[in-house]
Length: 382
Image (cartoon, rainbow, N blue to C red; front, side, top):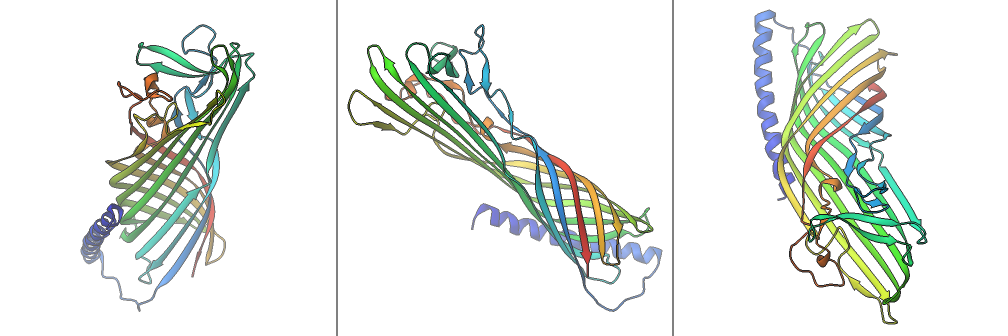
C-alpha cells in the first residue's frame, strides 16, 4: 500500500473519531439549552460551482541567461534572478454535500478545485555580434563564470526556457453545527485534505560556429527539472453563516496538518557534432550534470491553513448566487528554483569524464507557497 493511501486511512479514521466527539459535545449543549423536537429522517443535497481568479506565489529562479559574467561591469541578466508564473489566472471549484437532518445541522461535504496551468517562456539568440551566456559559480576558481552560447570569437547560439506550473486539490469534511444562535450559525469541520503542486522547467540551447583550433562544431544541450508535491493532512476548522433577509454572509477558517511528499526529477542531455565524425551523445547538461541527475524525494511535515469570506443572495428557495475571497497557504513546497544548484565544477560536464568535486549537487529546498483570489459562483439545494 502506498504512503498516500496509508495516510488517507489514518486521517479518515481520526476524522471519524473527532466527529464522534463533536456529536457528543453538541448533544450535551442541546440538553443544557433546550430539547429540540425530533423531526422525521430526511436527506437534502446541495451543489456549488465557482469560477476562480487566483494568483499564486511564483517560482524564484536563479539567473539563467546573461550577457556575461555576473557582477562584471555591463553584464545584464536576461532571464532569471526573479519569480515566474505568479500572474493571475483562471480556475474552477466544485463542492457537493448532503445534510443528514431536517435542520441541516449535520452533514458531509466533498470539494475539488484546480487552476489553469501557468506558463513562462523565454527565447534569445545571437549570431555572435553580441554575447549570450549561461552564468554560474565556478567552484574550481571560487568565482563567477560563464558558459558562452554566442560570442564575437566566431560562434552564435540560441536558448529557449519554459516553465509550467500546476495546482489542484480536493477534500472531504464532516460538518456539525456547534452554535445555532451565535450571530448566525457556526459549524465545526473535520476531515481530510489533499493538495498537489507541480512544476516542469526546461532549458534548451544550441550553439554552432567555427573556432580556430577546433573548426566547425555544433552543440545542443538540454536541462530538465520536474518537481511535484503531494500534501495529505487532517483538516480542522470552523465556518459560520449569517442571514439578513435574502442576503447571506459566510466565513471559513481551516487548518490542515499533515505530511508533504516532494519529488524531483533532474535530467540533462548534450549532443556534440564536429570534426566530420558521428554526433556524440552524453546523459548530462549544464545545470543537470552527472553529480545531481536522477530522481529524488523527501517527506516533510507541512501545514495548509485556509481562510475565506463570501456574500450571497438567495434568488430562489433553491438557488443562491455568491462572490468572495479565498486565501490558501502551504509550507515546505519544493519547486525547480529550490532544486537548481548554480555552483558548478566544469570538469563534471561532457565530454570530460566527471571528477570531484561533485557540483552541482542534488537539492530539495522547500519554501512557503500561497495562492489567493476571488470566487464567483452559485449553489443549488435540492
